[in-house]
Image (cartoon, rainbow, N blue to C red; front, side):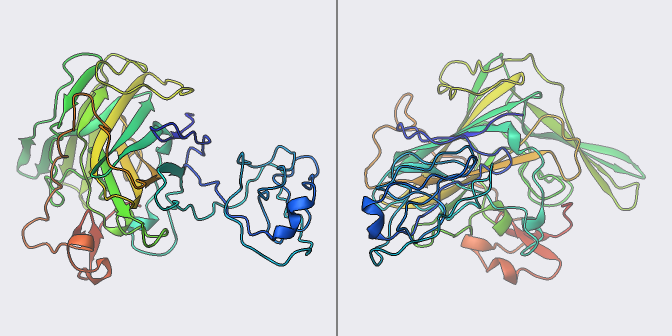
Length: 408
């Protein structure tokens, strides 16, 4: 398996995270100020981050005490988080955690005016909410690293992909089988002209959102690489821009390394109708050789044979904070609902303006426009009605009320 690294391009180092969810390990310690003169409590072997005597909170160390020794969990260096003044002299519980566990991911928050990238948890699937929120992502490990950087008015998000098959860039052909025969419709997907290759504003095949010619998988996720963005400045728990909440997808600006396309086959000769996504054959392996113009590959990433960098330009406001979700499909597509991975990170834009971020050759061009809703289909989410107001039998997906026939 591949370790995912979430990082910030301006030099902020982050701890390697869980493959499945890039799991948040940041926690906020609630502590009394009476623990300033006490020595840090030492947990038993395997206990993570015991609190110093006089601390009222649990899980994490106070700013004045050294972190407890032990091998369990992840202990941040330096302050464990913001402290809350309390009455002096109260003795709190040690707050140790079980060996090998770091506790449940806390709410990760940006500090106003400070640029940073923070590990967070996409938080899916769930047992409640829309049918999209219950969909499983089976290939999260292909997202080896995600790095946001830059300042207002434009930021840059870089995704590093790694797998034993090349990245699927889009659907180049749709075949519809009926009792009368098969009909084929072709769509342009940027060709890989060399190994490694590079393309700007790639052609992504069919980006239709509904019907036989759809460019979505069986769970209504775009086959082409996409990014979803949520402004969390006023609400750190806001996820309204996520795919699972009906967010609108944004296609990439640049792709480096290796990729391939796929064929979508709709078989109407069987009941129920079936949809199969068949990727093309893999190109020659490139490992982590991404070619000219690509960004440096983060250190410590292993290679399974095929590597790619996908880069997005995103519009951001000065001093705002954002939740970034990226979704890609790998190159074999042999699992029900589609072989698909997701990763999330918080992008704290800070209070500065851009200083050439994303710049190989100046400001990058704007991203391609998002797909539009089919004729007669209502827009939902940020650009339309409330997602919960979509008509019966539909679900808010990719900004449109689409027929809810997904495979979870």
